[in-house]
Picture 1 (cartoon, chains in turn yellow, green):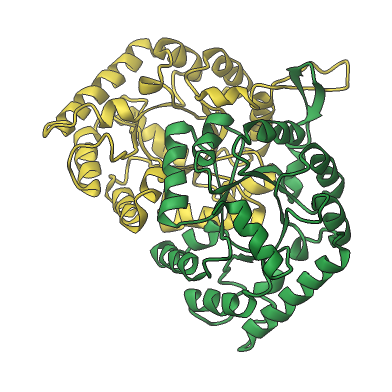
Picture 2: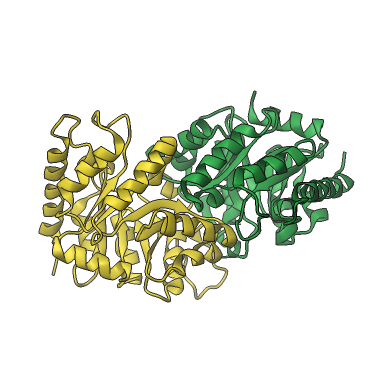
Length: 271
Length: 271
């Protein structure tokens, strides 16, 4: 089954556009072993989400024990819920093939995030896994997005209006999307940009971080993020859900936070 | 000791600007266990190089055994030769801190490569390790560099009108280089761009891949890559050195290839 089909099914079953980010930061975690922490969060939220998204940085920072916990976590997530490996990799073709192998074959992720800076040959080896989802960073949720992504392209041609870099990335992503498995990462912190890119790419799946701890407006992010059917947008929340409590009841608190987040999105979701 | 001092010392001691890329591709390797392969290559070339550069993709593709071999390799490299972890990471601030911890503290690399697409807050957590080297991707060696890096952008600043993206990245890198530990990655396959960026950043260390298997011109890459003292450029060669032979004599063949590469650079090096 393709990533998009799996996502659609999970999303319908749980009436949810929520992705829970499994980003275990030792400074914020309750006093629980890493895999046990993830397992408890998954058990408490599996009927409320359309996807899970572990960010590899937090596991790599913990060395081999972290990587082992990541593998166990990916294996533990129920088979009918897609897992997005948030890795943001990008390298030249031959190396990108090795990264794709690591993420799709070693960890078995259903989808990954990739960085577009190195262009098509850095992304194609991922896209060639036709049943996997490839989320290309477009307009990210952080302030540094202004440094390069927001700069306008200078076209020497008078008939061609200026476009910011992230719009060119979206255009290229659309062009590369021969198998229907390419999506985009768009921060909820930039709702007008989200709207613009949704107009350009009406059918693509958008992965939308930046709500919750990062403070983006949920209402605008839902209004402009979903497709015309009110679907194809994945709203990620990491810290507000998984670190809702540091006490013994952390999993129950995570469930309540995820349910609240789900409900806020459903209230604002058209269709 | 800072990364740049360590690099300068190794480079002077071995009269070398050669970096050997430790990128073990199972399809190209002789029939040897991974760490033993790296160990043999290191033993055969340690007096000929100024740095080693493992690319993490090839280790991640081999799962936990690969990551274990990477750690052992980083530990095995003689302490007076800098190790560049070629990871090309890039993520929002809080996540970038986790990646920096993984690369500098778990693996103990002396330097890393990072991707600039997410802007300053994605790079700063690396730069804050003042004794480590941070190579920001600028103009990469692959054909995909044309997709975005080569586009002309309007920066909005009075001192630079329209500039290709890679030049804006170089300008930002120069601005961010408060501790003297920021360098750039520039592909040898684009010698004119290398020349341009060297003019803009006369003192920075450049990491220059794309010679050897990727076919860039060595003469132009040396002429335009080094600083006015004939230093501060690191020429990486992976496949032509480490896969010089698949036979039992692979380490000796790697030494001959590294020595040849070193000599070609020395012949063209001014000063």
